[in-house]
Length: 453
Image (cartoon, rainbow, N blue to C red; front, side):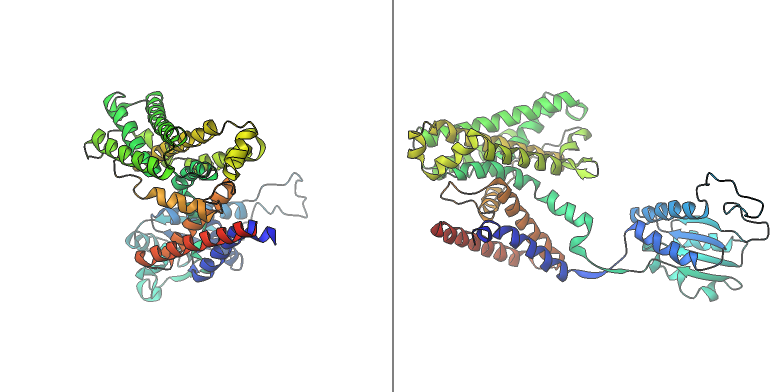
């Protein structure tokens, strides 16, 4: 049953996805390509005649119109074959003179514009292809009375039963909303694997965001700052946060301060410094290009999500295949035995705090980029969510056992619970209760698994 203990949190994540999928089953409009295919199937069953596609100006409706236009053109104007038609075989691409043909027109906007297009049609017989959002128009009720003398047939996409939770945009949002916590959780995993903890990561988010945005405003040209300037200001913020992590590490390994106390002090220092630097005000004098890291997309995926995935893949390789990664596990298991084996225990422990501070700084840059500003209130309570993600992911608070991939699963569990409860409209107070129960349950599972090992 060792595999069950190892993959228990993954099973929990899959179970939560199934629960919220069933809980959010609703009638929904199909995605634009599927909706266009539905309409095309209906048109194939009727003789050729004029078609008017009516839609709103919403992004979803315009996507539907584009999808329908492409599929309709491919159906009515198929690509010619290489073989020329014979005298006995008329071309399928060229209708005969007495054969009716399709004629399609489009109108996107308001019901008044659609009514004008219908009245202006010279044909008394017409098919109205209605986009998903336009189906609620009162114009489409009682067409015989509103347009006497015209034979109008309405064809609209049929809704499908599908979980709101499993909509592609919602799944992307789940991953996107957990990016900052997941990035910080990488560093926290390394620290906890050595038997420590870092409470300063939330405040370092704010410090990083404030340093970067203030540097851009004061030294980089503000809203006219260029890419290289933004990059240098971001590097400055990362170096300051790495330095804060180094101080944490030195206090823990050389001054022998408990990690809880050392990082608690740094949390207060970083938070106070952020407020002093921004004077309690939000700093928003940054260029539009600053939002690329937090809001940009690449190949249809958020840049921040791609960055997070690459970081987890790289960290997993380091932890499983390098001397440094094995040293962290050895120190968490037994620091004295690791020292006797020749591992530089103090250096390795201090380096984990440096990496934790550096990743907290990166999380601050992502948050500042998303919100296009820096503020000393950023990152409040994030250290608790980060620790929760690590613990829920199966990393032992005693050190020596866990993995970054488990941490990613833990972060996703938190995101899925929050997203799912929002979809089924559970109030925020109850969500806190559920989060608390999840954390307690994860710690109890960890303790039982540790005792068995």
